[in-house]
Length: 131
Image 1: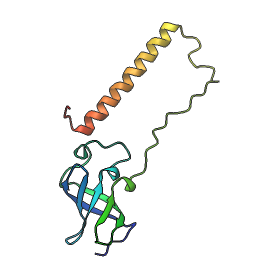
Image 2: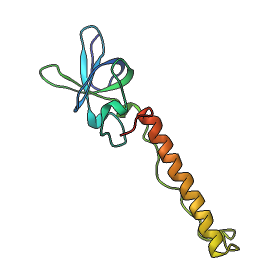
Image 3: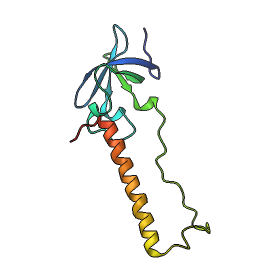
Image 4: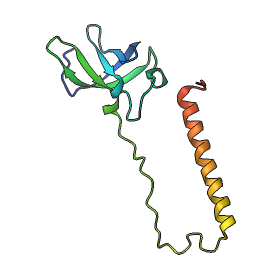
């Protein structure tokens, strides 16, 4: 199978190092996904995102003169929009009837829910492992 820059292929992770993951594309060809090309988010430990034996979709980003293939998992996934929603400060029902204590309690409740959501997401990513 001839591989060209820009191709999107499926492969199997055959090895993980501290700088990337090796992916087998076919019987004869394999490539490296650099740690910076694993995810749109910051990647400290590759094993938090992928494991040996995982099937992954990769994009061929480079082929050097020695035939080494550079791959990206990140470029096969759309970047999620993590920008917070805009606040309509002119909206009339924006907590104007609440006392300071009520506003503070509501703020604390929403903050705790967000913190718990982040903890749950991080726990799911790490597979329940504690660091």
